[in-house]
Image 1 (cartoon, helix red, strand yellow):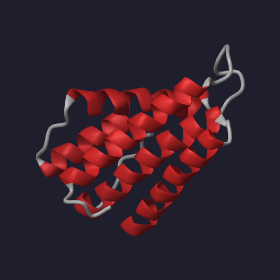
Image 2 (cartoon, helix red, strand yellow):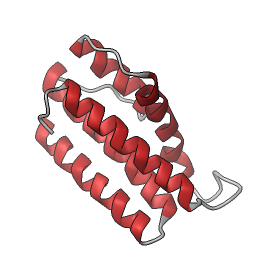
Image 3 (tube, rainbow, N blue to C red):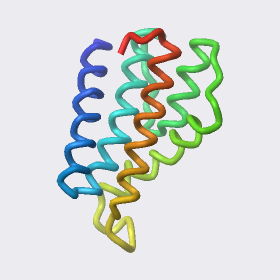
Image 4 (cartoon, rainbow, N blue to C red):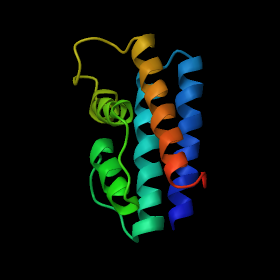
Length: 127
């Protein structure tokens, strides 16, 4: 079961990069958030046997780190928090005043990569 979540997380990571390259900034940010959410949920299933019902990437990261007995650097935690806004704002046309800008999608992908790399490091590079 965990591998299904991890495979989808990898696909969403690719979608985020593809959408940025094609100037689809809202969906790039959304897929960056989804990639991390599904990555961590997959690892929670793998290492903890279940996953919490939440879309909060920062909460999910804390659950995983608790299971693994680790602490995240502040920048990783900040990035997990930053990604959360894209779960709603990127999906709903009336959730924001302005359209997404390139820099926002780039920052979401930077955070996706930072959290992804950190999580991969703490679980032993299984991803």
